[in-house]
Image 1 (spheres, rainbow, N blue to C red):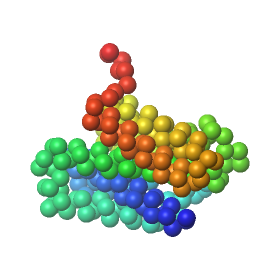
Image 2 (cartoon, rainbow, N blue to C red; image 1 turned 90 degrees about the horizontal axis):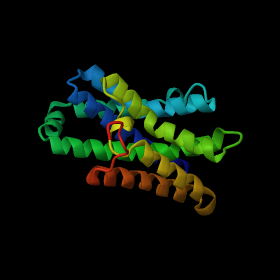
Image 3 (cartoon, rainbow, N blue to C red; image 1 turned 135 degrees about the horizontal axis):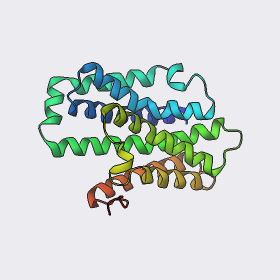
Length: 209
């Protein structure tokens, strides 16, 4: 179980690092900027989660594998050939960013819930869902702030709401179906809601509506 969870976290790290690095590429950042954006997106939510739960130092600083995966992913995407492949077609860029961001969001949302179960003295529904959503969206918020954009969760499609739906599903299914089934269902729901909202252009009401 621990090995499978580690694999899921590494996949989420890779996915979020890619979304951060791609954002940096679009902003014409140098290699340092692209790597920092990829790293921050990948580990930011987990750092915020650990601080909320009183885990110090945060797990990212105890095991460098997550930072290493994030930095390597960012460096690979910065390679001229890969960069040209991604940037020449806006539709390809948007699709890759959507898939990577959705995968990272789903995996980190349920990963946050698992960590909260392990470390919280009284893991209430509110605590579990809150920590899951913060873990899922935290890195993306930091990415957008560093990139000089309005955080994605406030303006683009259904984002934090997808994380919230997946977190609720995961917490509800946890005692009924077991840990792994709940995590897989929760993360799959997040990805499905994100993909469908992007395809059908679902949005929450905006202030100008």
